[in-house]
Length: 480
Image (cartoon, rainbow, N blue to C red):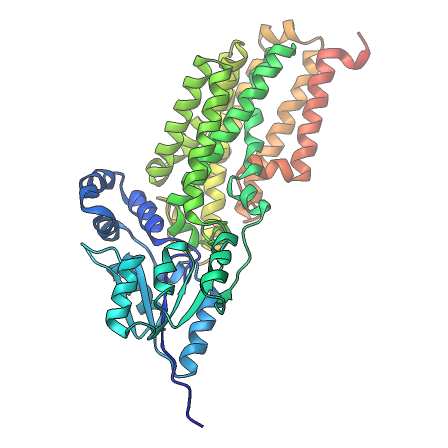
């Protein structure tokens, strides 16, 4: 019996071999290298999509070893080769990037990709395949409606994770087509992507309201809307930050499991998520008032600058993080139209500088545990650990000192019936700062210190004790 002669298997890249899209990958990677690439992209627009891809490929820095490949597709390719078939990578991605991926995988006999003046997609791809292998002389594995012209010329149709509409069209046009499926993103994956747990930092907008002892409905409503606006804006920035950090996240032992880095959520969806969340935050901020909206937009600009540039600058990144925390407090005061005392501003600035330094301290410890000497994507080295730890502790203790000086001021006597009880909060804060610095130094803090505190039982107990102390100092526990 004659052995079956297999046609060449032509495999698409975006959404098929990769759980991602190289156009978006190269855009965000190039932007992470420097925002000036945007001007070059504008100049390349008249040349069409192929010229844009060429510019992005020249500026992107993508490691093929860390990209999110579809294991099911790779297994299918290996099975095809084991049966004696030849395999070609045929993609609209830039030739330079496509060949680097093919070289890394070592699974392809040849590569066909977009050149400087030709975008290898749809009908163009179908024509090139027919010229190379003849009509019906190849099997084609793709994933999108753009592949329909190619499937129309192929001997075998293989669809990788097609949507319902595409599946219906394939069932009509190619009843015998094969399907390779993979799990779709879950709702929980989207919640992880927008970092809902990071919203634990946004109740900071209520600090000026609590400090001013104002609890009327209008003030609380303004504070709640400020919380929502900051949460949406912060999530848009987290999505943007993850897109810019795809390369470094994939090189990180823990962050590589994030939805965008792992390819769980398509990267093209991520780009629209960032825009939608930003628009929602601006709409809520505008409803609060123009002054608050101004602070909110400044926060977004500052956070974007941090994501693009400041986070790679030693010490400046810590100052920027502390400032972003403090902006939440300022925004709460603006939204609720309550005065922000210099005592609170000084206290929060030193406290947040301490927490930002602890965040970097934890990252350096994690890097050391993984055998790294340089913190990837940051400006720190392993030898900086002692200095960063000292910055964290000393700034935290200064925050306690500011609190102690405030408790000795005349303002406290006017606001509290038993101000002496508030001194207990200094002891608790001193203990808490010392403890989380120790936790970070031992490599047991894997998130932002404020988010860590929201899930840490000891931290929650400290917070509860401070609430009891403040309530008791205001009321005397009913002894008045």
